[in-house]
Length: 143
Figure 1 (cartoon, one colour):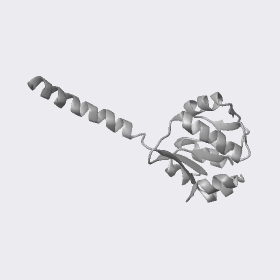
Figure 2 (tube, rainbow, N blue to C red):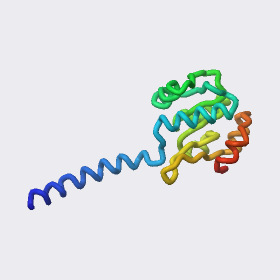
Figure 3 (cartoon, rainbow, N blue to C red):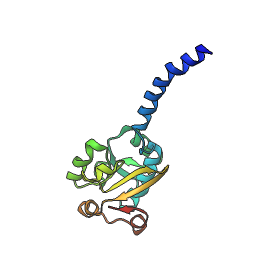
Figure 4 (cartoon, rainbow, N blue to C red):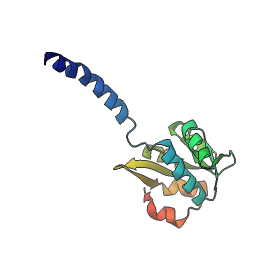
């Protein structure tokens, strides 16, 4: 009985550290899910089958579903460090964090309540020069 109690005490803090590490990514969707949304949104933005992407994980998933890396594409998937650069290059920027919308992202795809949710930054969408399909405008939450 004493050994079992010792084991619970010793593994308890380690388990908390592991769970804390996992919670840092709360809100992020898996790359395969992100890639599917990027494929749909790039087509809705007039750039079917091509996107700018520097994220190796998402790019790998995009290639699996027939989306090619194309520097000339008007649509970009960007992580926090690349959002401003992609916006400055005139790209329609899709990102995975709400905070990135303030940095120039047009659309954020996040996990909310266990489900994917799309947020739209109408000013950045307009600035990109891209006209989105009405279906995207209807399902996304506008900021």
